[in-house]
Image (spheres, rainbow, N blue to C red):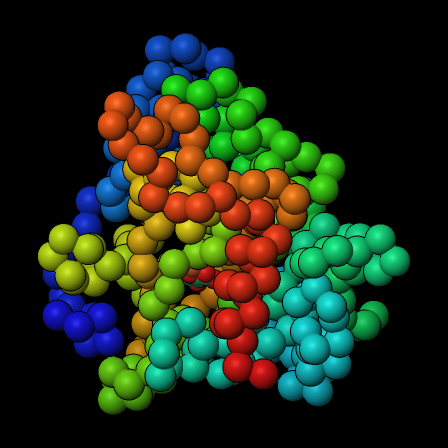
Length: 326
Ligand SMILES: O=C(O)CCC(=O)C(=O)O
Ligand SMILES: [Fe+2]
């Protein structure tokens, strides 16, 4: 099946749900099990979900509520925060601006946020955020930034588990994931419903792999996220699991692990009910000057690295640059 064919009604691919509470509680036996589960899931399908994390339910719910309210603002108020005003891709983007799959401009709106960095000190993807004016989308900034900082902490935890899963020192990815200059981008999405007919010819977000190392996704209960299974060349829905984050391996981690871990194609089909779908993705992009090259524990005897070493900034400039239409 070609990758642009409509979604199939196949049963969900085995995308395991991993409970990380044992690691947070310092349980050594549970940590070993979690690392093994993560190792298996990161190889195939490159997607899993986590529960037992410490991001409070009321924060997740409040963020989604505020995101819904933001996307409901009049177009001129959202356009005043357009990402074209920002050197760091921060702010609003409207329907059709990003194209991740050739031939399909995404039918989504987005709102990108990151760590606040003053313009004069900013490098690629660093800079100030753009927030709605007073009286418009009140509370978004406080909730989004609280969420962003908590997700950074969760990322450090997830990368520690990734390190353990690769038999590395637990702190191997600490600087990459949570050092002072480490870059993380967090984008809220709104996917409007389309007719059944239109849904077959469009994408909420076109098929793509994520550019960074690891993505942590908060989704509402509408569904529509699908993962491509390379072996059978079929698309499979990612089930909505209460309180879970969907976690997926991105291109940098695939490259770092010499393809041991898999950065899988995924996409979102537009809702065809009358419901809008909302999600918030947290992307770990890492340190701009870091070099990504094959991790020694990922090279068995007789194997050779499949990729040349690449600087994170070079990789990100190339991937972000080619994904925007305007
Ligand atoms: O909204 C989603 O469920 C997925 C979004 C996504 O894949 C992305 O932003 O890279
Ligand atoms: Fe993605």
